[in-house]
Image 1 (cartoon, helix red, strand yellow):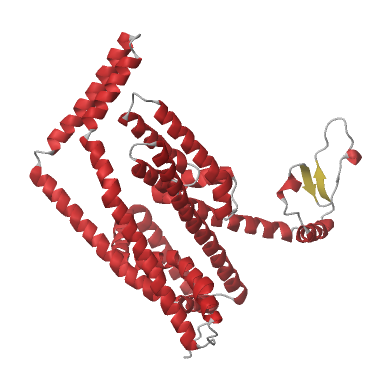
Image 2 (cartoon, rainbow, N blue to C red; image 1 turned 30 degrees about the vertical axis):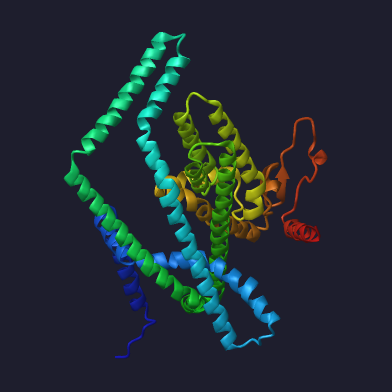
Length: 447
């Protein structure tokens, strides 16, 4: 008997198998999600070096492209070196070496700054905690001299907090064995992460060396799995996602580095205590859109106040400086670097940060905006496609005054005291929508 793969019974069987398998998967996902999470976590733990490598290669790709296209290629063109396979290999190899050197140098600078500046600053805060708390207590007593009852209550509350912190420190110190165990486990975890990072860095070199081939293999697989039109849409969407992510992340990192440097210069000139630590806090939190400047400025202001509460103007000066820096970043520097890379309004930016921050924590607050920008663009494209099939306008502004739409066309709302004929643009036939859209597009191109 000849096997017919196109038989309806075969299709029914495959459909039934897919439904049963989907039902079993859904059941285990609902009632045995813990095992699924453990399995996924185990797989991710095994693939951690590969994920590190892919993420590193993705973030270093713009640097490699800049070195190859803006530095090495013009240099070889000036030397009149002909285009050949050896030239391409030389450009790629040299570009990877330069990119890797810049990446290692950046890591070295960050570690050096952490060891030489950040750790001593944090240690100084811990060592001087008693004097700082005494300064705050003295400031409270001085401020509330005219209200002794309130002053005594606030001082008592602050003393209780101080005692609790001191008790916590005293209770931790005797537990030397558990402390050594905790530190040992932390060191082992750090070494494990460092080892995964080193392996990931080596993997990223291989990925950067063959990035065009990996992209070609992905396109080949897309055209093999999908119809031609569907594959084109998938590739186009991936390109849009890539441009959105790499444009936002690389621009935001560069913007935050510049803000951190400007903050260090400003705080150093003002004589702000712990200028390097505060600048690192401001620069790191600036990566988070919208809320980042406030998340960095508030604890920094509190730190300045705790160090020297007798001179509260230092906090005021720093707060004004942080506000001016945030305004400079939001209105001048940020738009110059980022442009309109996401295409989202302020409301959707806040929504994306809140939603993905709740799901993924700080990491979600950083990547939530580009993720939501991709989702927003997909929904907008879907809605515009449906409107185009119904011969309806895609411009949102045209729906602000819509009363209703029927088979005759679009009818705008008629304000009180006016007739329908007096309303500008009353009754747009559906057949005129495409021509109007084409005319609008032509006008936009002329502009």
